[in-house]
Structures are given as structure tokens and as C-alpha cells.
Figure 1 (cartoon, rainbow, N blue to C red):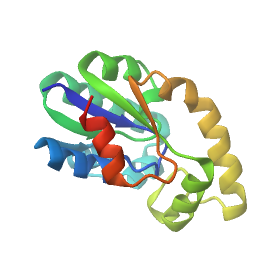
Figure 2 (figure 1 turned 30 degrees about the vertical axis):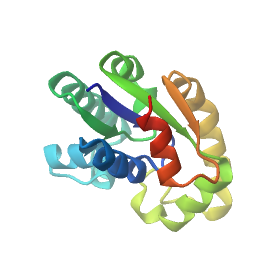
Figure 3 (figure 1 turned 60 degrees about the horizontal axis):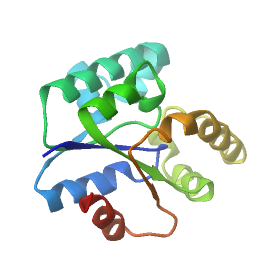
Figure 4 (figure 1 turned 90 degrees about the vertical axis):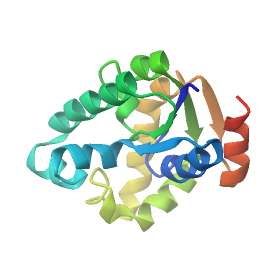
Length: 169
């Protein structure tokens, strides 16, 4: 079976959907951030703090390509920025079936407010600045996300409904 890569902005539900989808399809679930942590021995926040975002994106691209080229038959959840750097989106579409979990701005902001301490890119932002930051990022990243082979408008849908739509493809 061809692998599936879930893309979308942070807090769009990629990991939550990926875990359930992998179980339903009897496939391995891989979270790219967790994979990076296991390979580097550093937390994502630690990499951002000590080495910077450019270093992180380089390692992220290397790990992504390593997974895509070496494995098959998995569900992979990538970070929100992963498709937007280097040739990552092209590589994703070459080796796997890509699914964009399109999540409304308001939903993303509410989720991110609740988990800011775990998100290096937004951890230092005030709640008032968060909406503008996310809206700007979505605008910049949207052209990359739109290259996905399937877009699912998440809206108010539950995980079961979302995975059922992906599983029939």
C-alpha cells in the first residue's frame, strides 16, 4: 500500500487523525517531529532555541526524505512548515499520497492558545497576536498546502468522518 502523508497547519489534527487512520488501515504511524527528536536527541523547542529554525528545517528535510525513500505503507504526520521548505512537497507527492487537513483559522487559534507552551513558533506570542500570526502563516503556506493530492475541509468534522474520507481513496 502507498503511504499517506498528512499536511496542514500546526494544531490542524494531523497527529490525532494519523494515529486513528493508521490503526484503521493497519499501518505504522510516524510523527515527523517525534522522529526528529529521536534522531537528534533534542526536543523541537530545544533545536529552535539552540540551533535556530534554519538548522531545524535542514534536519527536518533530511529526516523527511529518509522516511519517504526508505519506507512504505505508513501514515506520516509532518509539521506545519514541512511542505513549505526545499523540495519537501514535491518529495511528499513523489513517494506518497498527500492529504491536506484544511482547518479554519478560529479553530487553529483556539487549539494553539491551549497548547502554546509546546509550540516553539508561537510560544512567545500573546493571545492577541496569535490570530494575526496564524493568519499570515496560513496565507504564506496555502500555496504549498494546495499541492496536496486530497484536501479535506475539517470544519466541525470528527476524526472518524475525516479518516473514513481518507480511507476510501
